[in-house]
Image 1 (cartoon, rainbow, N blue to C red):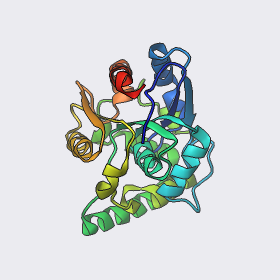
Image 2: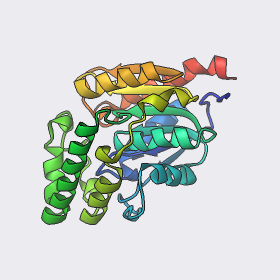
Image 3: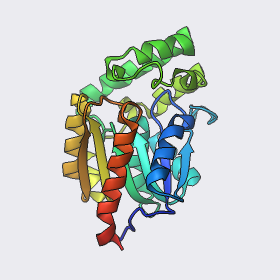
Length: 255
């Protein structure tokens, strides 16, 4: 299947991570437009976040359907949870995913027992969110070592507080990593070019990213120096540069 290059005037569809909203991409979207004058930026609220309703009847596949319905054809950029949703979208809607950028994402947990343990942990965390409320939970969440590279300015705490306890708990129960069917043996089906990004200081997702890139049919793996898990928040310019450079390098053989 032929996929066109990401060129000026194209669309970037941005899918955020857990506890974030579409607004979390506002500054990053402007950086992409500096590289791609005229490009359309569509940042989407995923189920249970921002202005989107809780995903009572949702899973990762239906979340992918909703993402593509809102985003349309384009280059999809997914971070963490948004990357997992975007992976499902690439498998379910290959004609809409012209290119794919995955930031700190995973194709799932292979081991059945480990996956079940994670599902139980996600359920406990969902109950905890409902018990303590959004503000307490967000402060606990941002205290996770995974986000040690964020500052009060880059953590986007105020935007995260726009979410509800019910929405976040429902998101964990329906689209958490523990619920995800492993996609490792299906990655070769994705024909779109894929850029896999990970932070230099994010050892876990750097290893996962390398594995994903080696399993995909057409993938490039890049490490963002000095960054942790949230590379687009910690080093937005370097991340936007990496995406732009990758898409330009791909252009000659995609015309």
